[in-house]
Length: 356
Image 1 (tube, one colour):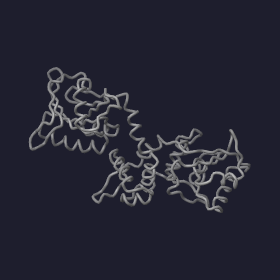
Image 2 (tube, rainbow, N blue to C red):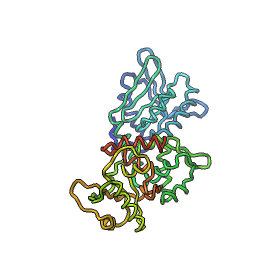
Image 3 (tube, rainbow, N blue to C red):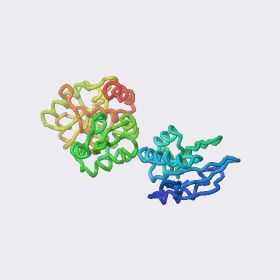
């Protein structure tokens, strides 16, 4: 199959590549005829019509092609295919793209539409014929596609939407909340829309429709290690005492900070005992070290100062008992891949506070 580095950029290029490797993709079927831009009547044009045969069984594949295979585009293609199928009763509707995402594959199967892509994912079912093939490259492409949502600015939009999952919001309002340009927010919103996580109403306001799936996608790729972490040792006797000191000196010095990891969970949804205190800071690290009387260590530290790769991590932080904590969704993704029972604590937080 075609390599990701050579992926076509336009629909005509995608069709060209599809025609070139069609025999491989449809292994097990005899291809008798391939036509492009076929008018089926009433000005309805199929991108491709492929006559296939197995034994004495013949069918026409009505193929609608998109460059991207995300759910929004798959839904558009399925609507078009339903119209084409009404004009060609023996036609089998098939969605095609460079790569058909896992979500789109599920949608197609659920509504009885086939799919095919340049990576090698194929699903066709008609008569006694069933081809259901998943390409080995799918997982890597899926992760790379979602990874665009973990870029620094993109996570601001994702975080804002997840923090208010039921709110309809305009792009300009999102831009103000995220300290971004409307153009930058629009690009992220378009990506989220293509992946089926959000919808826009008739006034172009954004609504999150799959908050749980978006949170899962973000958590699966996030790691607190993306930030800069400075580890020290505190002489305070307990984690609670360390946290009290952080809240006291942070308030006195009017410094922005927010607890995360087990320390943050302790304040909002305690479940697992902990010994280390993690918190995000902005500004001068040396000031925190001096005010908290922290000692440098090579190993075995109990205080972790997290200098964020993007200050959006502090969006929607909230105050609990005089201490600042990151938002629930930021806390969840920070905990999710933490090896010391982080997944358990994250799940408890999700059940008790996030609830989607």
